[in-house]
Amino acid sequence: MVTQEGPIGGKTHEVYFTVGFAGAQEGAGIGDVLVNYRFQLMDEDGRRPAIAPRVSLVLPTSRDRFESRIPGVQTNVPFSKQFGDLYVHWNAGLTWLAGIDLTAPQLAASTIWRVSPMFNLMLEAVLEEATLTVSPGFRRGWNIGDHQIVFGAALPVSGDSDGPRLAFLSYFSYELPFK
Image 1 (tube, rainbow, N blue to C red):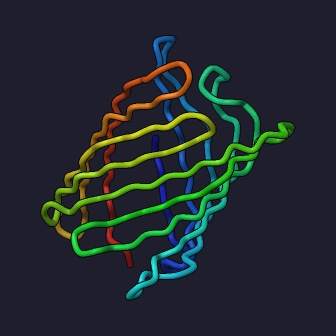
Image 2: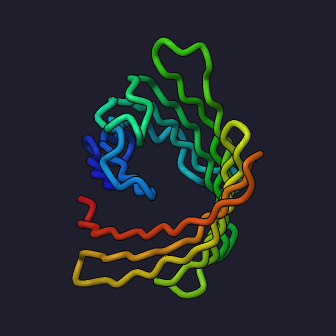
């Protein structure tokens, strides 16, 4: 997955895109493209969490064996709160695809423990339709001047009526300074 973020005049408004990449026994390929808008509704302060709703257009750009090939809209409302070196996140969202009467709800929660300033242990759980995915992982960052490189990995385990499935997820990010 590749994501390119771009704030508009500060951190309150952000427009960005996400391009998915899928791999399976049949091969690998590019997934659908999401064009996202995020609004920083509330910053974290004292007892209240940060809230940043997002709406995305789903553009069907993939070959049909990887995605639905149907345009749609996705919404997500995340809440985040820090408790010392522990960060907790909750998400609730819906995906609607054109011409399909079914909307797919998603619920997610994650915990990030800052073991050291640049090393985090993470645990995420996502419930989408009848599939639960639990994903333990880590991320490690390095500051290079005013830029940052971040690498992460996780082992998502999914389960539904077909039984458990194990996957591998890797993450790489090159962060530019925010001005």
